[in-house]
Amino acid sequence: MEGEELVFKIKADFLRSLAHPVRLAIIEHLKKGEQSVGQIVQALGLEQSGLSKHLAILRQAGILKSRQEKVSVYYSIRNNNIFQVLRPIAEILRQTLADGQKALTHLGEA
Image (cartoon, rainbow, N blue to C red):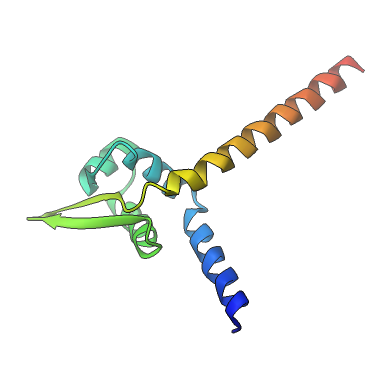
């Protein structure tokens, strides 16, 4: 694999780690600060086994970091720059939805 192809694969893998509603919810939830697995389970209403898989994916992607304290594992955002990635995506989606709403309004007038 050539250098440029490798860069594209790394970027695609990183974006793929974000491409799930539960993982995005975890990131948004952890925006408030470090939480234990139990706290995340309770806050998001998820099964612990499913949550653990998503946490592992986000940790492997370098988005989350974890630490263990006795029997509890705590997760937090590794680098808050992730929100600088997510913010423009939200803005693009808001604009796309607004444009779609305008088109629907015009259709209703026809």
